[in-house]
Amino acid sequence: MAIIETKQLSKKYGEQVAVNQLSIQIKTGNLTAYLGTNGAGKSTTIRMLTGTLQPTSGEILYNGKPTNSSIKIGVVFQNSVLDDDLTVMENLLLRAEMYRHINREYLDKLIAKTGILEYTKKKYGRLSGGMRRKVDITRALINQPEILFLDEPTTGLDPQSRKEIWQLLNDLKASENIGILLTTHYLEEAEYADSVYILEKGQLLETGTAETLKRKYGTPVVWLKVKDRADLKLNIDPKQIVGEDERGIGINVVNITEMFDLFETMRHNIVDFTYQPIDMNEVFLKVTGRNFNHDSNR
Image (cartoon, rainbow, N blue to C red; front, side):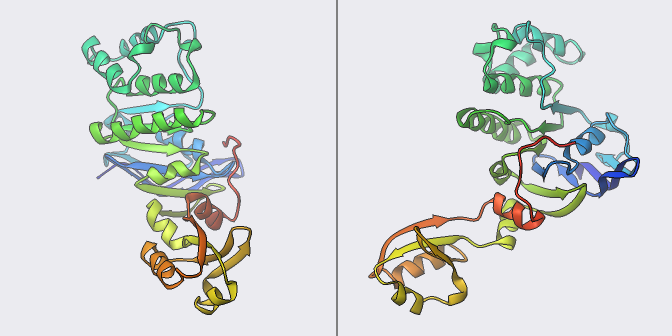
């Protein structure tokens, strides 16, 4: 059973449709990526799922029930809700006091698990972006949620900090078996997802795993630099050639096996090569017909 399931969920602001008849599922132990351009309705959806915004129509089921009181939810917002002037530990203790079943022993174990022990005596406002985000995730996990909402959790972070955040999230998904709903402006992060939903102007356009979507919307390309281009073209189906530039001749390949077969056939002619796998950016562009931008959405 899905932790959260929506059926024909819609939200309108006057005549403007922010979310249109959305049907999705978020399952235990799964990472669900929720992707869309500016104004696609991602934040509006999260607000409805977390109960801070009432839908115009449709249904939301929580563990099969029409009330979110049947599950425990954690949310990491784009902007932190913690106090800059308090230490990390002071912030977390204040949040823990909101839950009767949370004790200091559990909080200490959680802090160790999320890797923020060395930051606990520092003021939250003096931490780096990556450290702050780890603390935000820790805060969201205090009530032992069944599902964690992450609204663009790595925006503005450097590559090393993003890598550390994703290591933490993958560890938590495996060890805690929680469901995670992710919105992100970094489409490569959707590669980690068990399920992907792609929206445009509030409308669900496509869904599937990252791998199935990549297979559906494109094939990898091998760029070959060769001694004799005419000879290469004689041994290649013209339909496989995607172009020619400084990288050489671009050839669509279905899989790694086909690529190695090509290398074997043309080994006498190949000087160098570049492998270009299809990624989620390409999938997104083909599904929506638009480049992904980094503006915030409603």
